[in-house]
Structures are given as structure tokens and as C-alpha cells.
Amino acid sequence: MGKKKRTRPKSHAHPRYWPTWCAIGLMRLAAWLPWRVKLWVGKGLGELVWRFAKRRRHITETNLALCFPELDDAARARRVRETFHANGIGILETATGWCRDPEHMRHRVAFKGLEHMEEAKAQGKGVLIIGIHFSTLDLGGALHSLFFDADVVYRPHDNPVFETFMTKARRRIFGAAIDRHDLRGVVRRIKAGHAVWYSPDQDFGREASVFAPFFGVEAATIKLTAKIARMTGAPVMPLMFHRNPDDYTYTLEYLPAIENFPTGDEVADAARINAFIEQAIRKHPEQYLWLHRRFKTRPNKSDPSLY
Image 1 (cartoon, rainbow, N blue to C red):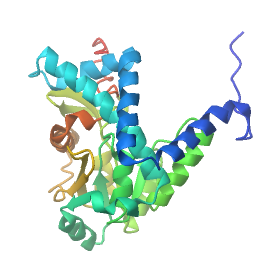
Image 2: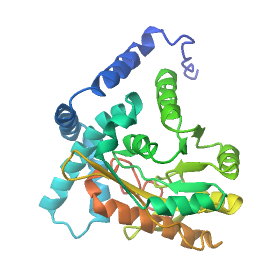
Image 3: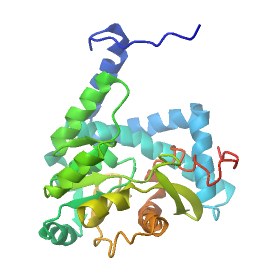
């Protein structure tokens, strides 16, 4: 006999969800901690994960070895540890973005390239924003909302209690939170003149992707970016966002819209998107989500796993 499928409790008050409610409560509390305490707690969390999450550490080490072969062993080891620290801080940054009014952070933000977004909006075709999975992702979205309205494409969480909390938080920051599988919804919002924030820098599998260089490695790169641009005619706007070296301020920057995109060549279009993402990552590589198996899907099914 096969295993019975475990059913989800209908009530969000079920004991199974009590740990989730505790986590949400801790996030709400963390959002109000003094800034230096947030940094200390975040680095501490990152240090704990670095020490004990051997699988994630191996993934990060592999990604950095592939993408930065010029680093010697000692330098790569430092970057791995810095990555965990940055992503630990990212948990506190996410809590701040979801649970606080972003207005309290306005004095910490430098936003460059505002004129590029204004030019894109003036075309009246909506805008496709290319974001990246940095540790600052959700705080970056909150800070972006101080200057421009945007919708966001996201992956729903498997835990229904956390999904409700996360979606409510993002809808407070963004105009709409759109399921990543809802292509029709994305196109509809863009055609209605909205800007939609979309992050195409993860491995979505062979069927959804073409293989294009990413840090010199052939990586499964989602085709949907060019498809959305083709279906809507919207300008595609690269957005960079980082925590600055002072660990106190942030920089967001729009680059000019990508010219002549899409071209109809899926591989060439994917390579151009990857080139921008690589450019942004090289500014502060430790802040990227290297814990993700970016090279999970191999060009040939028979190729051995890199992880």
C-alpha cells in the first residue's frame, strides 16, 4: 500500500502551524530592533547556518568555485562565509521590508537612474522590471515603493499560514502580488500600464529554459523574460539594489532599458539578461543567493550533477 497523503489542517490555528506563527511573531519583533542589533543578529544567524547547514554550504562553495575560478581557496572560503552572513542579515531585512513602513528608511536610500524609469513609463506600454535574488530582495522592493509603484511576480509558499502573511506583506509594498505561473495575469497588468517586478535568475528546469552563459557556465535560463516582452511590447528595465559597505545605507539603480529586446533568438536574449545579472552580482557578490542550485539543470540529461 502507498503512503497516505498528509492532509493540511483547514484551520490556521491548528497546532501544526504554531511554529509558523512563532516565526511570524519573531519577524515582526525583529523588524523593530535597532539597526546595529539587526546586523548582529543577522550575522549570527548566517554564522549558525554556515556552520551547521553542510548541504547549503556545499552548494554555495560549488557555485562560487564555478563562477569565480580566479579566487584561491582562502579567498573563496571567505566569500562563502560572507555570503551566509549577508543572507542572514537578509532575513532581518526581509522582516523590516514586510513589517515596517518603508518611509522610515527613506533617508538611507540613494536611487540612481530615476530618469530611465520615467522614460520607460512615458512610452505607455507598461514596464518589465528585471530584479535579482539578492539577500536585500524584499527590503529592496519596499524601498523601491518609495519612488515607483510596481507589481511583483512571486512563488507562493507551501505553508498556507506563511503564504498568507507573506502575500499580505507584499501587497502592502506592491500594487499586486502575481503567482509566477499566472502568465496571463502578468501580461494583463503590464498591458494595463503597470510596472511588474520579475526575477529570472533561478533554475526553472529544462522545459522552461534555454542554456546561456552565466559567469562562463552554461546555465538553464528561463525563456519567459523575452516572451513577456514580446507579448506586451514593454521596455525591459534592469534594476540593481545593494546594501552599501557601511551596512547602513542602500543603493538602488535603474539602468537604461535593454535595447532591441527581444530579438527572436532565445539563446541570445537569455544571454543578454544573464549578462546584466552577472554585472549586478559582481558589485557585491556576497549579497547574492548563492545557496540556490543555480546550475541544477545540466545541458545534457546525462551530465553528472555539479552538486
